[in-house]
Length: 356
Length: 172
Image (tube, rainbow over all chains, first blue to last red; front, side, top):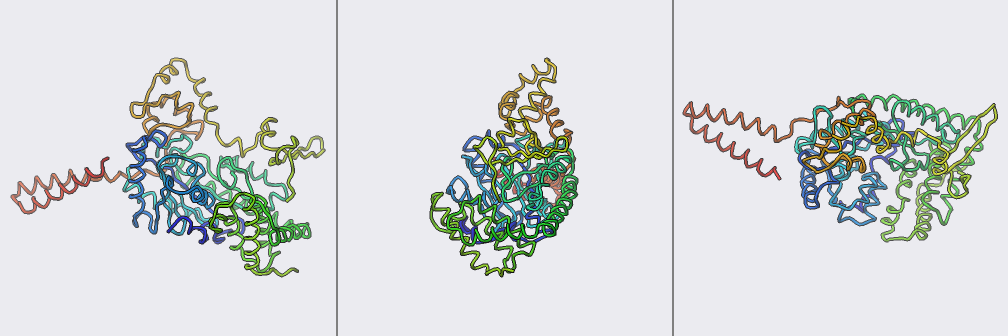
């Protein structure tokens, strides 16, 4: 497998399946782990870091730890390849921009990715489409236990798994659920969600993690506290609030259909029209329009349009994906033209949607 | 969706506030910078902990004697001082949690509400299990020798060698 091959497959979180998948895009759990006997990444000497990367790569790429797994050396990867991994949520932005010896191990189906020498020596991440906390945790825990058998983790009885940043210590766990909440945003109720979530120590982030802006009405809800609770307790808190948010979004969608059907139809069809016919389109505008298209499909306002095609477009129209699909580097302006062309072709293939 | 420009006229408004004062509804659209200037605190931004702020609060709260002790502490493993940690917000090695415990425990309590782990426990690493196995093999060897079962003893001796050799490779 090569990194550029990723663009041709759909990726776990984009399959559009799983529980409540009309609203919940994906479930993600990551564990921060460090290897005993080494300083944290920021204090590793270059040769030490290279050695550790090598050692961890060998421990991870083993069928008893992560089957069908490939390791990619990010120091050797091109800028576009690294960007591609960020766009697919397989590595963090910090990992993309870092300089030292580092890498990522990816299971072919993209359900598991393990960052090596990010802020911590190991960041184990499992992604699942839909709202599937229990299954995601089962797999995360399995990978962690198998890897912990081979690598002695930095661990203390008192404080649990020791991490470079004190906000991750203890379980080292961050679980997040990505939600598509266009109707709550349209009906201006999204802040209620933020408040409800903040009350129970969970936080809301944008699409690409901490400090990023929410785009395309996509929000991630995750735990803030990693110490003093068991993994199951932390997950139960998230498990408890998501159905409420989902229910509110469904109600808001129904409200829009009942009271504002024409406006919402207009919005969805305008989004479709723009995407189907635009000649120049930015990545930001694309995401905003695709969000409406996605809503339209789930409200059955657009018939014959496959949701997986829409989900695919969310990722394939991002800058690095577009350039890999085109097979060459493109400047921002050329990219906006290529993006518009690509979207037109995809929507034409996805079938003409019959207007009512 | 129509995009609204902030009152400053420079950036896109990403924060939308609806104020209702005396029954009068007013909508304000702000970019992130202007919202910060107006000191509007939103759960999305406020919930991301500002480590340095929390830290300086803790250092102030601690007595002077304790502060002096914290200031002098240096991690023998990674050479980090508490001042280094305060400015970086990241530890240098796992040992720092113990070296700076006086400063770190209150910090953990502020962040997590506690400084005690209750989650998953790390299984003993393979090296520790190898130690157990080694002890077990050595006693088996002694027994085999005292039983004069030399063939069995030779097999056990080989196993001990193999285990030791494996560990030698595992160490850096």
